[in-house]
Image (cartoon, rainbow, N blue to C red; front, side, top):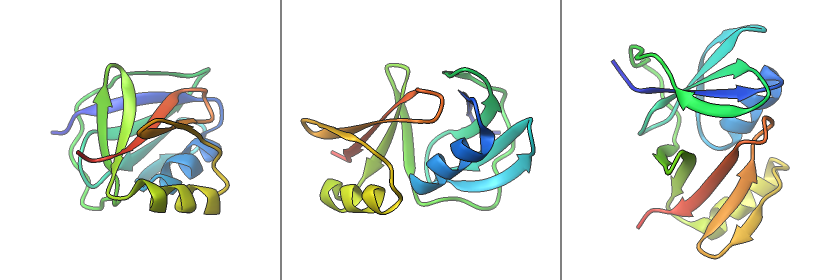
Length: 122
């Protein structure tokens, strides 16, 4: 069983698109109810309709597929670890995701207003 994080977003379609652009693979979609996304490393992400927020979710079997993202939770925030921040800026811009540069990381907000950090792996 794998750790699961619940992330609440107002629109599942927008949430799935956002997290796929960050490197998660869509594993399961129950329209209007929930979407399960999988990183290369780290917890599974279970999106559900809501006003925003992140919480611990139920343990779930790990799917066979996986994205290329490395996901961590630090101080209650989602953190995506990348090899090259400059490359990641170009990739995010290609997908039309706005971000702010904040020192050694990028700050984005998902469709639910949840903060997401992107930084190089130390």
